[in-house]
Length: 195
Image 1 (cartoon, rainbow, N blue to C red):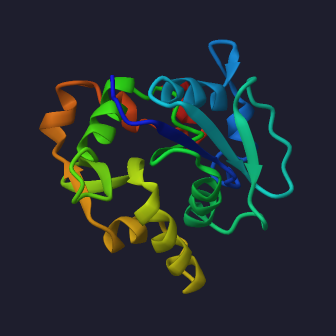
Image 2: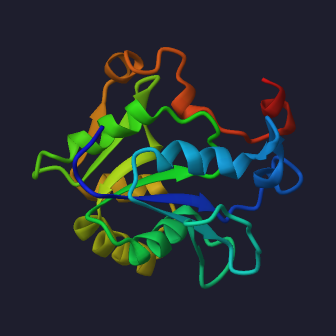
Image 3: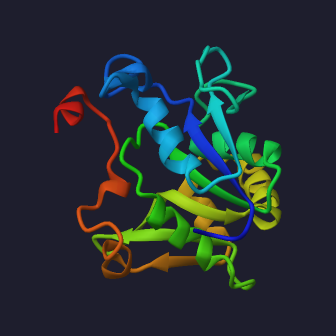
């Protein structure tokens, strides 16, 4: 698919507040939700990092690197920063651990946008708005930017994309690869598992 070496960062340190229990261990087709996200992003990555909360024990497949935030529940930008600090490759693809239907061709399209050296990130547009997950990031740019934002008290992923040169792939363009929008599906409530 893509030529650059890629680190996948799977954010798995949230509270699952709306779900009411740890959603990432919920079974889908006989496997935990988290494993589906790992498999989806792993198709475009040379290494996969799962970022968990500091006080959680996660079980991940062999070959997947598990790292923990220094403190729990500080927000997605802190989790991404933890993953970026551990990344071995120049490009990182970041996804949520609750995204079970990622389409690798769409993730590759995000990475391919970063072949343009003037860009530091790429995300998908949906409904006229850029979505922070999934996203592709140039680690050398995103890491210091994320560090600065976190030091300033910021916790939103969207703030990182606003701070660096970000390309937003128009919805009609990526929908050619994923007509049903499976890449953007996430699980927030038990009802989402049924759908």
